[in-house]
Image 1 (cartoon, rainbow, N blue to C red):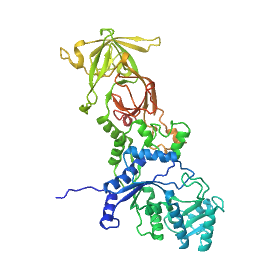
Image 2 (cartoon, rainbow, N blue to C red):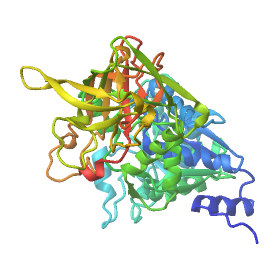
Image 3 (tube, rainbow, N blue to C red):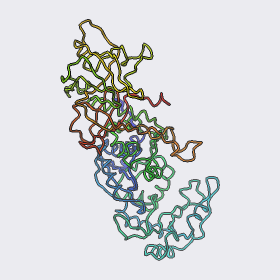
Image 4 (cartoon, rainbow, N blue to C red):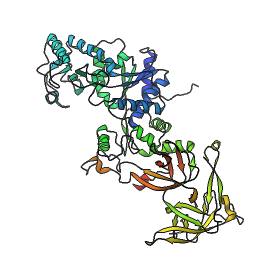
Length: 555
């Protein structure tokens, strides 16, 4: 019996095209506009565009859609390339829509000569008014019946700069009564005096995306133009252009559902507001949904690709829960991240019966999930730091498993200790705990065989490494921050606890020579990553994700 292989609808379409010999190979492209930074939604498109090419031993180009020079910059081009490389994908060629400006311009001339395009003098507002609505047909522009000769002359004069920006456009002549608004004589060229990052000041007219897209695809040799679902209504226009331009091997557009992730924003306009108003520190702020922000926070390429794989390829839009993304990074880092002990909110613990001036080393596994990573030697001494949350003077109930006066706990991989007394400042805050330890209990073994219910982590005070730790959480406290009722602005939905900075954290002695990007699991705390701004004298560590999903329960 043949093995059954599950395929998504894109693969089924490609299989049929190859079987029917519509194409003899597969070529895709990833076509971002270089006007911002890539975000988690782009990751899905990258995985699909490059993944389909890989699956069919084809090629995938990176093609920058630089048809709007007023919003584009080489900064974004560089960032896009870095993100794709980071995810582990390789393009066949780096191309630009501007590579095809001459071809696209000649296609516009061809449409004019066929009587399929005309120069229109209506303003943008008038064009919208003439277009009609979903319920009412549009009406023809008064300039729709200009002669081919007049249109050729006007378009050439537009190109030479004889007219002001916005005074004239070139429109396709299709059907103003079409039920599809995209087919109601769309604008395909506009006058725009703007310096282009690649072509300089050569052009004074620029093509619209809907016109440039199918032409660029086909001239480039793209067989399957994979787009997100919002372009489904544009496909008839895509096909119309290629049919009227009589291309011999036109590209085929296939749409898939885009990824919508709750508790996040991907709108460039809204993200730009966050940056400009200093709500976040920049495009790579670890709370942002940008790939550079996620990389800085400690997400791995493997976790993001796993996330995209779990979502799958669908035909209908849906909202993905943020907890799935967090589960993917936990699962990945659990396998690869070395363990360490870090005390984020330190409280001094003094073992009164431990010899002063003495210290020892405790051997601890680097990662119990991967024994090939070996062990590490952690310093232990008379004075330690523990978490403030791991001590209460009086245990609240019998289920309390941490340290309290008169109770015994195990110090991770070390000894049993019993709390006897506390020191307090003038305001009544506990500044130190005095304990005694059982010298025979190292490693959790005692002569009398007794067991304790609680185990807490610690750091040797004389050997501790100081660090600033940033506890990052979701930037917004509602599932749909851009469309919540009862708020005047999406920034009203910001989570006030999305970043908590702890400047007095203590790390175990093994955490030396840290490099930006190094990842760890801090025992009982979560997964953490060394920040790009961290130095030997100013260690900064970002929390990637907590050990468990507490958000759902908290909310």
